[in-house]
Length: 166
Image (cartoon, rainbow, N blue to C red; front, side, top):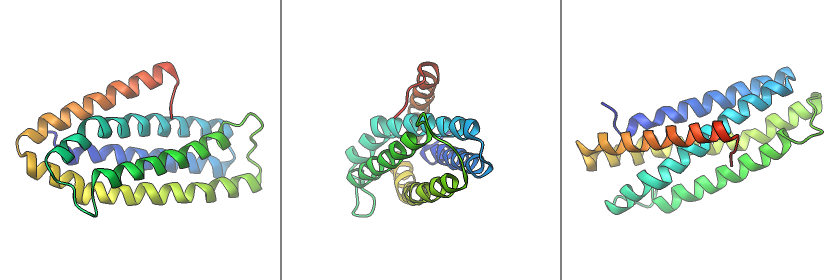
């Protein structure tokens, strides 16, 4: 039975996509670098949108906000993540992009902040947000998680079909 904390699997997949992206950067494979980043981009967009549309309102409406884990704080993290992703996207998909040694070092260093913010956000959601939502909703957590998961899958399919993203 799917519950809210099961939605953290998307976080694991995001981390895997970033890792594969970084490995391609280090290897100097621009095409693979772009492919892995695109996968990351689509999953990030679909996952964060599903959270914002379905899970964040449920959390807020239940009065579960607390100073270290409020919807306002989670949204601010989403904004920061999107900003860092846009910076990376511009660099990676720049027409004249090359992966010489200097570029590889710069790209890896630039993604360090994104990885740190993603890791911190994952900890906040995995240790507070999802467990509190599950505890408050009880048996209804399954239905909410299924709805969020379905929305994420639908958004991801749309992005993959249309080729869009953040």
